[in-house]
Length: 137
Image 1 (cartoon, helix red, strand yellow):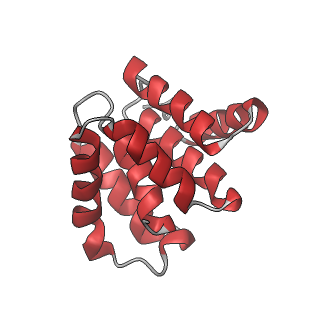
Image 2: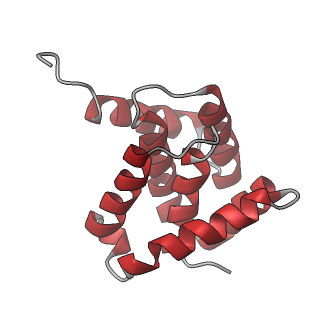
C-alpha cells in the first residue's frame, strides 16, 4: 500500500497526465505543493520523481487507472479525501482550461473517494476563485 502522501501525488499525476501531456507548469505546481503544504511535511521532496514515475508505470498497465484509483482510495483517510480532490482540481485548472480528459478523471476520482456533489462543487469553486487570472493582466 502507498502512503497518504504518495496517494496525493498519484492524484495530481493522474489528472495532470489525463490529456497525455504533463506540462512544465503542472510539474512545477506538483513540486510547489509537495514543498509547501503541511500534509507533505514528513515526505521527502527528493522522492517526488520516483513517486510520479511509479504512478505513471501503474497508469500504463492494463486497468492501470482503476488500480491507481483503488490504491489512492485505500491509502487516504476520509479526512484527506477532500484534500486529494482539491489537489486534483488545482491540477486540472492550472493551465486555465479543464480538458475533457481531466474532467473525466475528476468524475472517477469523486466516485472512488466518495466525495459528495456539494463538497465537490465547493472545492471546484474554491479552486476556480483561487486561480482566477489577474483582471489587469
